[in-house]
Image (cartoon, rainbow, N blue to C red; front, side, top):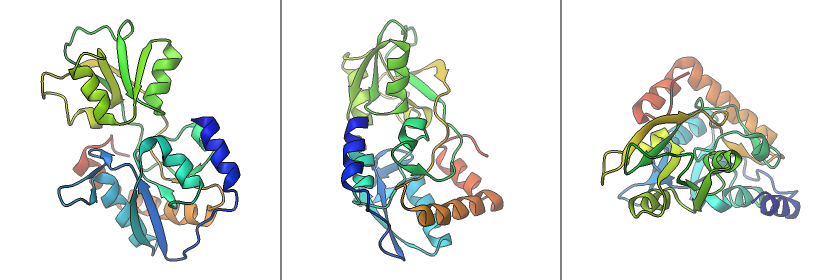
Length: 236
């Protein structure tokens, strides 16, 4: 993934934020409650509401673009949209390729969901979405990892016996735990450095606008209210 990102970056060094008043917001649309597609076929969730408010405070017009997770960074770098707002944790590896605003949520605990509360995660097969901090964590631990392109596929792997447990953000697993026999394990992991918006390295003015908008929402309490409404993470 890193090689792919760097290759794409080399082809798009001059890509930049072209429109002064319109910003294209790239998101996955498959990670409730952070972002998802509602029954009307529109992007919805915490980050839709957050992004619209940030654009309003930055005096920008939002256009929402849905993009698969595994190509979300390359397509930002190549100019298919101007930001990533998709539950993306800030990491040093990602920061080598793109830039991040300040975090708009603190780190969300990563949790495990399985079909039994007795699963040994260290000795079992653990599912995770590819190119996530959870997949990297399992690989670094030397545990048995099976990766999938989408969050829903990781959960399906547990239900059909392909994996013993799935590791993902707790806020996402809260939406599936208790259904179809799935249970949340007591063990949790603290990984990642909070969630922020991704921008191209060349778009420092855009980053500054969103940094200011995020800070204003922290200062007046509206960001905490939004976090509580969608139950995505702990509050600031």
